[in-house]
Image (cartoon, rainbow, N blue to C red):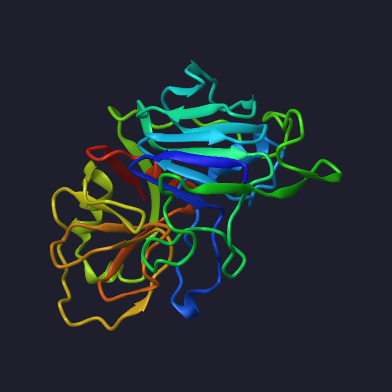
Length: 299
């Protein structure tokens, strides 16, 4: 075992890039809410993009490394310390045996992503080690005293174990994602949307309202969906809608008229009309949006 959990924080999950193509079995894609940040953390330590890492909500996580390793932290921005000394974000860092890693409350963004060279070795379901909070499938949220294993991955051209390899890949060499700053909680996030399959269930004024006003992210949001507060949208059709398939980023409107954006752990079917769909490239930013954050749609 490579890591011991001393304090799991409010919610720390094992996540990779998710399990795609299993909606017919009732399983959502799951995976990291901010996929770009997980990819970056993996790139920095030489892992494949799809390696499992840790998604850390609001900091509070405290880990002790039993074996030496190389790590990288991406996503949210805050104070992260190793044996009490701050470490840089978005860079690979060597960790000695016995070292303790602490995550402070982020100043920008909501979720840190920890990449460990070799990846987190966790049970896989349908090709993914991701935790799905809706179905309960995948590894359980981390708890105090739990031990995490470090896996084995290809780094460069050879198969190596996670703890024994120096260095790691660096961004900016033409491969992998670029570093993206976490969103400023004082500024609005802009997300692009396309018209959804039920946009004709709403009047033209509702579409204009959707893309012209600033919405506010509700504290009731989670990995299943981002709930929005603002001036409600108005349906022109009120008949019952049979349950139908829902995609990642679907902007569903319940009777309240206040939309919910379906995120990684969303249900695969729903019975409310979908007025729009947020483009996949912009969903990562929503994964870092804090309660009270302003959100604007561009469509």
